[in-house]
Image (cartoon, rainbow, N blue to C red; front, side):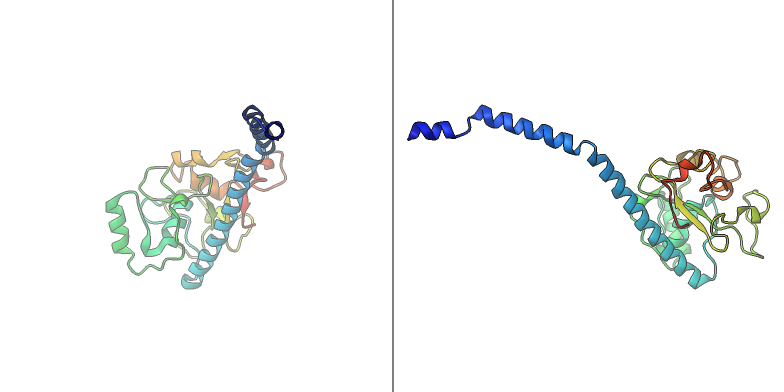
Length: 231
């Protein structure tokens, strides 16, 4: 009886072989799945953040009559910075303590419209202003243009009508460049925009407002196919 039980039981070597085989099978099964699942999770997060930004922008417009500008006071020369600055209200943060204190003192009555998670705040250009960033670390591209009679900015970009939203002319275009970090005919890599000033032709604000090819059916439009947008 004892001998039969020994034959029926698995030996240590057999168990190790089975575990190794199971490990290989699991590895083959999920080798292509895990990267895609992480990508899909970030896309879902980006869409969720887009919805939150839209709600916050709608509330801002309800209170003020206009959407936040693309360029703000001081060094706010990028539309992703103004998104964070105006929607954060009186709880606006900064990597620099003196800036943070200054913001809090000046904006004590500014209503917060959105609570930004730390993962969705960046300071890539080092100007001590946070930008609103997507799950891939790229800035949100926000194109509002100017309202009739609104004072012009110091960006030096010419006729305000040239900076009207391309897709939603009467409100705003808002989008993430998506997993490939690129968009539009000009192969815009969003991270490079931080390296230039607003009036530079490679600058973030300039690109966001003037790359009208984005989303069109051109040979290079494939760089826009994975964008997460409100249009």
